[in-house]
Each structure stands twice: as structure tokens, then as C-alpha cells.
Image (cartoon, rainbow, N blue to C red; front, side, top):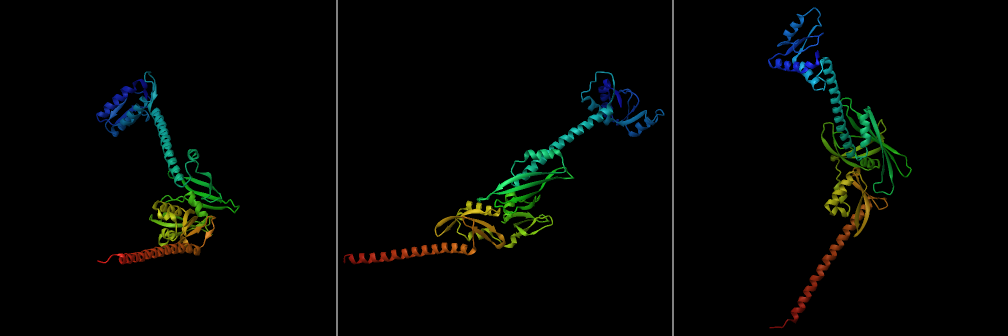
Length: 384
């Protein structure tokens, strides 16, 4: 509809008044500059269309539209900052359409920005809880704003697990955009473990679980070192279960990934009971005991204080769910076999037994001495 822009406010007021009386449709000449005197209002669509058909032969001469649409377009034009002080023709339909498209673009940009920010926070949390810290914020933002189908971030870490050697982890973090939501997800990370002793590198891909706890970078390193990690996982039905994971270096899948063996809770491995078979000082303090067990569940080679024959020595332990025990290493990281482990417990038990026997013998001697003293005193007592 082409109107005299100076008449826009009057036409808006007239249209709102007619709408209040129940008029829902309007008809206007197409090839004319319109004002409140050239626009006709009708209660029904049929009435408006009949009026248009009753006009001149030129079918484009009259056209109908809803009153609400006319009111919305006039409001949009008047609030856009257009100068209404001059008498000049103005196509409100085209201008209103342009303003709507501009608003949609701005709204979409705003929605996209909001979505991107939420997506970034989600990705940052995923990286944080998988053990990669908060060092990738700038790279994440840059890649998400690019809008590519997928992207990668490289990370290098030095791991030593308390050992004198230092191993290098070169990690490739993989992100992919969803085709349904346009949100990016952290899907997996590929680890290349390079040993300091010039051994061949070892590679493994770890996938991010959306419904259960994912394997952290430290746990991934422990698994690649041949140790076991305890995790809470979910089956296909969504039911949670506890199990120990251990890499089977003898079997791999079609993608070159080593198989992960699982030792479920029904397998019968009791970590606490296995640790309790050793004379470990930290087990006597609840907090230290919990710290020790939690560290072993993460697959760490954990230092502990062993007490053998009253002598304290620093050793290292790791969980071994496959054989339902714990592995013990001396201060030089040499494996102590199961027999030596038993001897340690036996020595401590014998020491306690000897100590108990000595105490009983001492108590017995004190008792005999007391009886002798009583006899002596009895002999010396005067007779009555």
C-alpha cells in the first residue's frame, strides 16, 4: 500500500478505531496514494473481496488486507524513525517487509550469539572435566565462530606419575558440528604416547560418553601404561554399572584401537580387601585410606608407607583387578612378587605374636614376684 507519509498517524488512528468496532478487513486502490478517506473497511473477508471485484476491470486496481496487518505495518514504519513531516508517497508494505527482514536477521544473530555462548560453555566444561583444563577458551571460540563442519585442537602434555621418567602425550581433540542443531560436540581425543626411553610410541582413541563418565586424560595415560581404571558406565538400556577397565594390547579393532577389557562388579574384585592384606600405614587413618583407594581407582601408581618389622619404607601400589590383587613395587619401582608380599605380612604378624608373648611372660613374672613378697611379709609379721 502506498500512502502519504504525512497521513500515516491519522490512518493508523482510523484503522485502530475501525478495528475496535469489529472491522477486520480493508480494501484500498493499488495505483493511488492512500489516506484515511480512500481506504474502505469491512467486517468480513467476503465483503472486502466483493468490494474489490466490484471495482474497475483492472483486477489490480483494488486489493484487500487484514486490518491487523495494516496496523502492524503502520506502527513499524512510525517507530522506525521515518520523517513524517513531509507530504510524499511511501510504500508501507515494502518498507515494513524490509524492517521485518532486518529484525529477523538481528534476532537470528542474537540467537546465534546466545547459542554459541552456551555451546562454548558446554565445550569448556567437557574439556575441564576430561582433564584438559581451561587453556583452550580462545581456540574454542575461534573455531566455533568459523562454523566449519568439524575442527581439531592439538595438546601436548608431560606425564610422570611421580616416576623419574617423563613421558610425552600428544593429544588430538576432535570436535564435530551436529547437523540437527548446529551445536558442536567434543566427540573423542586421540592420544600418542611417546616414552622417554626411546620405546615405540603407543596410540589410542578415547571416546567421550554423553551419558556416563568419560575417561580423563590422566586415566587414559594410566590405561596406556598398562594399569586399570575404575569407572561408572551405562549399558544400552541406560542402567549404571561399575567396572574396571584395562587395555588388552593383544587385540585391536578395525580402526587400530586396542580393545578395552571390562571387569564388572560381579567379577568379584574387592580393592579395599586386597590393599588390607598389606601392612600399609595410611590404612590406619580414614582420610588417607580414602585418598589411597580413590587414587588407585583412577589407575595411578600410588606411593604408600609399608611397615615391616617396625621399619617404615616407601613403596608403590597399583590395582590389579584381573588377578584380584594389588601389585607392589619397591622404591626403585621393581615389582615385589606375591611371595615377598606374604612374607611381609607374616613378619609383621610374627612380630605382634612375639610382642604379645613377651607381655604375657612379663605379666606372669610380676605375678610370681608378688606372691613371694607376700610370703616374706607373712613370715615377718609378729605372732599374737
